[in-house]
Image 1 (cartoon, one colour):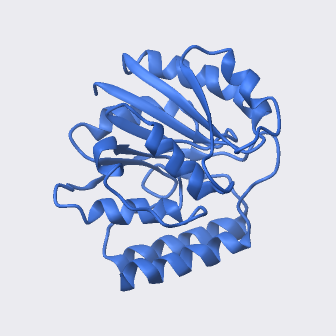
Image 2: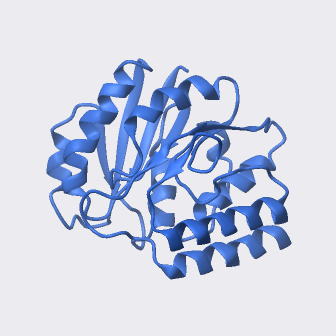
Image 3: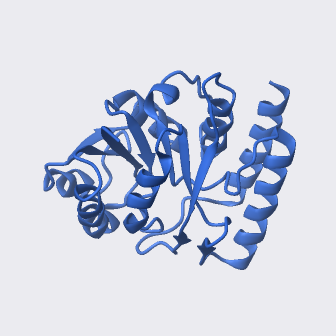
Amino acid sequence: MDSLNIIIPCLKEAENLKFLLPQIIKNLKNSVDDFEIIIVDSSVPLDDTPKICSEFLQVRYINTIGIDNYGNAVRTGIESSNKDYILFMDADGSHSPDTIPMIIKKINDFNICIASRYCEGGLTKDKVTSIFLSKVLNFIYSLVLGVNCSDWSGSFKMYKSSLLKKLELSSNNFDIIPEILFKISKLDNFKKIEEVPYTFDTRVYGQTKRKLKTYVDFLITLCRLRLG
């Protein structure tokens, strides 16, 4: 791998970034020479995130363009990226930076590599109800869209940047995650989805941004992608 951007959408995650950023940098230094972490904060800072980011040379802080939502944060990050590959991570500590070298090694010449909670060796420490809803959602997505993927809803995924920049993405919330995966799978030079197992941990500080409405958004987007 020549170069890598890690894009982390944030909303009041300063306390988590304090310990997360040093761990990411440590793992990247041993895996890729040319990298940059892009923190996509809310359009107006709501905590000390800008200050935390300024303490690291390898981190670029930017603000979401448009209305504050996850979809706009992702689109802002993609537009701001300038490396060969993009890895999305959550800012809450649920995605272990120790998994990053495995993803880099596994992606090789492929266009997508995901860290999966549900492939062999994967694990999640989420609530039982969340696990059930997530597994049902993932099964339905694979069945309806005809793309073999064990973890549609998780955001811990790496893509080839040139493919991401070709996409027209319309989702405004976490449903942009499966939208990206499906639309890349429809591009002519798509090969296959590589997967590595990881353990999804509970967030360290703050409250989850995913609500019950998130699953409704996922189902609406599934219908839109299937019919489109």
